[in-house]
Image 1 (cartoon, rainbow over the protein chains, first blue to last red):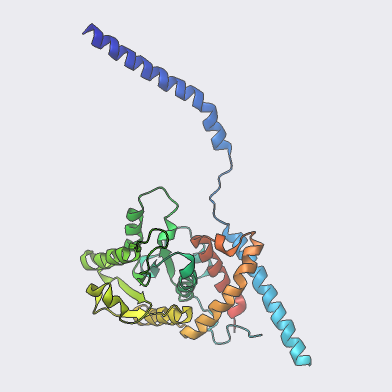
Image 2 (image 1 turned 90 degrees about the vertical axis):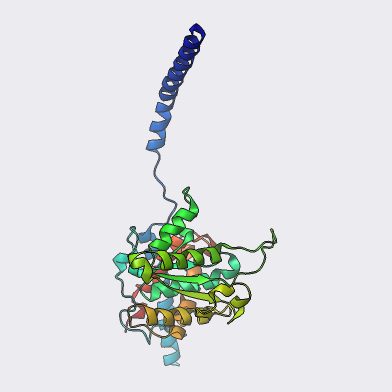
Amino acid sequence: MQALKFSLGVVMKSTTTTIRKRTASDAPRVKQIKKLPRRTGRLKVADIRKAVDAVVRERLAVEAAQHATEAAE
Amino acid sequence: MQSFGSGLPSKPLSMPPKQLNKPAGPAYSQSIFINCPFDGQYKQLFEAAVFTVYYCGYWPRCALEVYDSGQVRIEKIFKLIEGCHFGIHDISRTELDTDSQLPRFNMPLELGMFLGAQRFGTGRQKTKNCLVFDREPYRYQKFMSDIAGQDIAAHAGDPATLITQIRDWLSAVARPNKQPGGQAIATHFEAFRKDVPDICAKLSLVPNELTFVDYGNVVGAWLTLPQFGP
């Protein structure tokens, strides 16, 4: 019984110590992680729209210029 | 050079631009589950299918949406199938994988899941409708004879044929939508493909780096531009 109590006490003490230690040591790291900018990995839809808009407008302008040249000839 | 959109109605898309940006899941009746190979060999057909689905005013959904997350993949695929009224399934990839020398069974499995939901599901799941593709007509009877009796479409590896089949199927089974014919959509798809490298360059990407979600956003943005105006 004494041995059991002793071993339980050791386990509980060590567990408590581990939890306390982990909490204490990890706290600054958690704060650091929270401070990092969040990245989703996806492109912003607004950026995609801008890019698509620019490319299509450039192409349409080239086509219009070609049509004008052909008409002039 | 040809100018595009001459045969298109002034509003080719039934969904407004704002809806394309919605992060929340699309409506059940507007969602189409795309089940096909995702490798480079099939890429053009896959992109043609995605383009056509957007063009016809629907939302493409596929397993690529869920591959990057840590959740159990099959559970997410079940969720995707549950949330889609329509399905496009391509069972044409029957070749052995070059590395493993084994066939890929994901497409037949996901077709089975879809048909199972349609057969055993309740409520709106009963109304599911799907289009099944193979490369050649009647070829599927040699490796999946149990689905003989269903209408299986053949795309012959040609994006224009695939586009026409999807467009005609949607016109038949979904809400009638004023859309041009399949050949006109295929012409627009070719024009879009020519624009993609320039669009990617502006985004500091190469086309192969576009994810499924980003590709969908590019298609959506391209289709809502006024180039299709009267």
